[in-house]
View 1 (tube, rainbow, N blue to C red):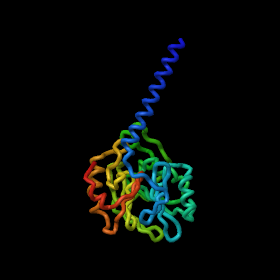
View 2: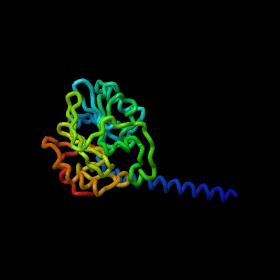
View 3: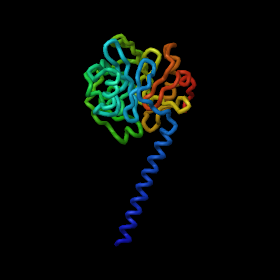
View 4: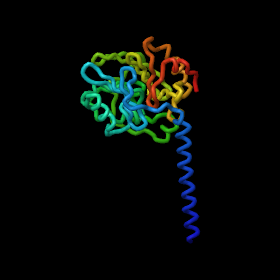
Length: 252
């Protein structure tokens, strides 16, 4: 019996090591080459806020602040701390613009008394009434969030909030309603792309994405749709890079 128990424990330990090893391998292969996020980095008109492994961006306006995405923490600890450093509170958030509706980009929205802007095609994913049609999304399934997009908009829509003009461009592929959000000299593309440590751009991560071919096609054509003053590309999980690097993207 003792030998049987020891053998079982050994098998359990080996299985646990295999799971941990697989997790480390997957993390390294997917994220190991990414340029790391830097909390507080000034990115064009915005400040980068690191929330776990996810980025948000705050953009000051005449009397408050806009947010690009809303992080992964439902308690909004990183968001509140960053806003306080910038001289704002949650009440000063005038609007949230979503690059897409995955849970690690919308978690703090219930803390805010602010309208939500996103592309119409993303409304159901934000609400959680449909599951993402990706490998991970199929495993997780639909999970209602109680979050409603206040202003669902279409490709190319321009919105001015408290003196700041924001344009939303459709770049489907990672999700059906993934958006490129343009503010002054910066385009925020969420998880539709990532930056390598050398500054080069690669596409969305496959296991979290619905259509990589479409994603790559959208990234390849994005620079031609951007205003000429755009010089910086900001992402949802990696450091920013240059629009020239985005222009060099050829699908990977």
